[in-house]
Amino acid sequence: MALRSRKTYGDECFEKWEFVSSGGFGQVCKARLTDLRIDVAIKILHDGSSSSSMILRDEAKCMDMASFNFVVRLYGMYQGCPPGKGPSTQQGLVMEFMEGGSLQSLQEKLCDLPPWPLWPLVFRLAHEVAQGMNFLHTEHLMHLDLKPSNVLLNDNLNAKIADFGLSRVSASASNSNKETTGAIGGSFKYMPPEALESSSYEPVRSFDVYSYGILLWTIATGKDPYPLANYDRVESNIPQGDRPFCKEIEQMKVDGLKELIPLMKECWHGNPNQRPTFMQCLDVTEKVLSMHSMGIDDAVRQVKRLMSPNSNTSNTSEATNVSLQTAEESTYDSVDFGGITETGRSFNQVCASTKTMSIQDKAKFVDRNWAKLIQAVSEVMAITEALGDMVHPETLSKIERQDTSQDKMRMLHRPLRSGGDKVKAAFYDALKAQHCHLVERLGGSF
Image (cartoon, rainbow, N blue to C red):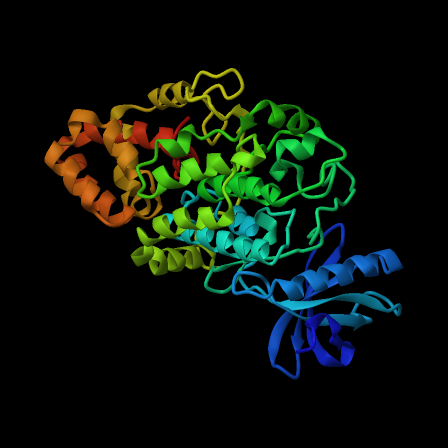
């Protein structure tokens, strides 16, 4: 069978061109492939030099080798003059169009309003990325740039790995501008310590495994691992053992996290020989996905509803202050992290700030926004446990047995209703500590 990278499409093959995005490599357009009646993505290079053309052909060859369910499909090469690009001939790749955008764009759109994540979808994404990466490694390919923007989503929010511009069959390295991509290619926040320490480092498969560990953290939290850190800081701190802070997700009462968090830490282990293979990762991700398989369709529907143009959910993304943290630390009073929550406030600051509202005001907030809270709150068990003796043990047990966060919230409403303003105010305080952005958006006081 002929390689897809040897099939070339010209301008006559396309109609309905639309600009999608651009980057350092060039731009991506959406177009209609007329003979197949499907929409495709066309990645077009800014630079038409011979060296750039060779890089493009190398990427196409890697995509040919990586034909798999969880890898973006290549249809062929493009050569022509796309609309708005002038009369000169451009080259590009014709690929499967992913209607759902990227994992990064999904996280930016959802932000935490309601809070990321919807757990069944999280576990499916983790498993599908591991499946895609395992296939690449069995084909003796290394991706070398695994990150949220390179995990694309189809209309049903299934994950497919994309952007093979840095992929290698051998262990050769690609030199790039380290301020944007790191010393040897790839995004520096997802690069392992051994790559940051040595300019002569030649990547091996454990490079991708480390990147996957950081990606798991971003999938579970919906956040950038080090939003305020530049390359120099990452280069200095990561080899010393610093990693994204895990205390917040370790406290979440979600089935599967007690298996996923240790996997995450094993993947980002400082010693590359101690990291698991992707086959070993699949043993874990398949298990945790099975715990949530019944909730996937509902989670996908919720995300689509939130992303629809008619949704009332704000897409404003606020920078979060998650600083570098040594992986072994487990207390809130570390020097680097300082107990910072998702809004940049310490836990004590959050609790103190709620005192600016009276008990009656807090209760009115809960009553006024209860319908929205049912849909938005994900950390129901953490909030319930913070209420302590205000929730009867039998009721607590019933809440734990509910399948979804919405059902847990409905069950929790009983002790709130019977306990009056005092219990509702305590719920408000616990809610504020877990979901500051949500409380602020709904009119709560800081």
